[in-house]
Length: 512
Ligand code: C2E
Ligand code: CA
Ligand code: CA
Image 1 (cartoon, rainbow, N blue to C red):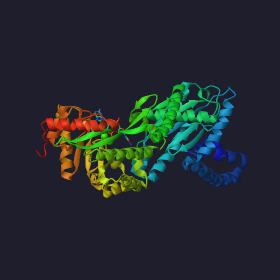
Image 2: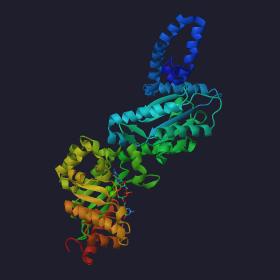
Image 3: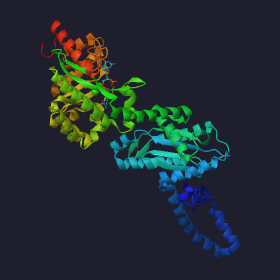
Image 4: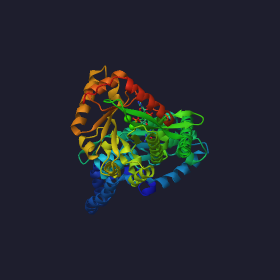
């Protein structure tokens, strides 16, 4: 690394320049002057006195350049780093020497860039690289393999045990996590480190070694922030299972194994159905029913969330048509959009086209957007899409409300029609006054803003009654019904209709 970029300035030379031009050199000045006088007389003394400052100026400039210059230049780009790692791999493959490949990943770097701007983020990256370099020896390699992700390959040595590897990982991590001060702002960073020793690499090529370090870093991030993980075989197997799952999920989407199940939403005032939420289910031929928590990450990693939204919308619209055809009144279906689906510039066009194809009016679709997405969305594609869908006449439901710090301004800006109060506020609400106060505050805010409310995760009659009394408009949860496949919805609707006729109304706080 360093010697590649600056062949004339090895670490030894750098240190020499420091000794010759820095404060330690001052101690030798009298000695040099005296010696020149002894050996060369007055003439020599005059020449030395005149030349010394010039020599120091010249040498000082070199030293200055080295200490204050951007050491970030020592960081190899990905391709060069990989080539050099391949050389280290071959050298260690002889079995005499050992090396360690470490990946250091800064956490939440995108949030940092968003908060402080790209130029500050770039400065932080450079400082981070400088600090990593300061921890390393000159013969070690460093590269930046992705934004805010650094890779270090230690120079081969005869003996390298796990303990030493962990210590180096911890030193790199500690160096990165020292607060960085940029233009008077102190930025706090966390980093996770994953590493793999050459001897533990799973395959026979440098690519396998690099993949192993990548897996170790991914595992560290999963346990992060501030985690360190050494590669092991179990991680490798788990990774393979996940990538199998990714491939299978892609096929499952296209072959119709992933479909929506529907969970009813009812009015607290009338008890009537006000809609269904479409929740993805994967009916796996061998493993049975898989829940979204287990396959959404696989779809996200394969950039297939957009395709999922399409599938969910298609089946939801087909279901609406079927309910209409059966003469039952289901006003709308809620479809979840995690964020990345909302980034598509052609989303509006696509939804319009699908609605037209099924001959449905836009208000039959409720677009469920997570509060965290709305809270974060700057003026970008996501914002434009949500607004355009609102203008088209689709309903905008703010999902998991209470977990994402959306401002009142953003709720207004996105023409949110309804907030879905997160399950965490609803749990045990009938017995916990603190929960009741929180729900009360949310309902008051919603009422002032003229927005409807739905409580999620309503499991008991007690919770249902309390929410109705407090004036929450809609409820959804296991207490009303669990999500069900489309085929069961008509039966459920029929039974629910009968029950409504038999039961006294749970009086809503607002109207009755
Ligand atoms: P969500 O949008 O908040 O959906 C509600 C989740 O709570 C569902 O879990 C539902 O089955 C569950 N739930 C409903 N009532 C109750 C209750 O009374 N008690 C408890 N404990 N849970 C209840 P599910 O179906 O496992 O979905 C989990 C999450 O996965 C969803 O949370 C949503 O964020 C995501 N998801 C589901 N389908 C899709 C989809 O098609 N696209 C996207 N992007 N995300 C989806
Ligand atoms: Ca939802
Ligand atoms: Ca939710």
